[in-house]
Image (cartoon, rainbow over the protein chains, first blue to last red):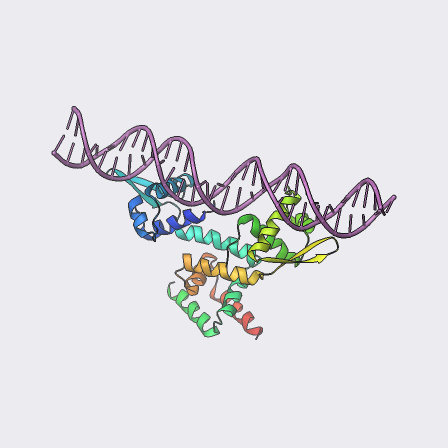
Length: 119
Length: 119
DNA sequence: TAGTTTAAACTAAATAATTAGGTATATTTG
DNA sequence: CAAATATACCTAATTATTTAGTTTAAACTA
């Protein structure tokens, strides 16, 4: 899957959050200094070309929505991370974070239990 | 900490791997088509500016080595990832991966044990 | 229906990242 | 010491990304 650039990712995050939005609504969510309408419009169209976004006609304009799910993109990005920085080993990654966060065995076990609850 | 661009990251990975290297040795490690000497040399100098790399004089040239440790950089990158894609929750991230990889409770527990062994 | 408004599409300018040519300098070699 | 060679540094060309002005089309309003 294609990588998102910084500007593209910022807008995808908003779309993932809002589920769907037109350009004005996206700008609404952006921090000041807010970019020009056309700037956002262009990026959304690039995202559409890359296949990350689709739209439906809504009144006089377009309502955009994510075509690639956030979990799909993050999953791929994490895989890359694990490959590049933990020799492809998920175990190493977890170990690393448990140490780094000084997480206790109890805490990790509680995560375990939570995961099990959902089955 | 500053982010690495794609080209920069590729070279950092090699330096982290080799511990230290001159430009020729870096190129050695790169897949064909190998870039021009000057291309790599420039990127290394950018990395030096950004504070990721330092060098020592060695014979007629420079031997470059990482100034920022791989774990430091990956740790920061992972934090960003967790923030952007898992609401800052390390738990969510682990849960997500355990589900995704269809990892069993036993397996996660064995990670736990391994981590404990090291104490 | 004609004028006005709104938003997308097109286009191009500005900025950032990547790649590499040329030059100067230092070191080795004959 | 002089020539050849290797390497860093300076610079510029190319390519990718970001930003935004202009144009076009649709649809709303009087």
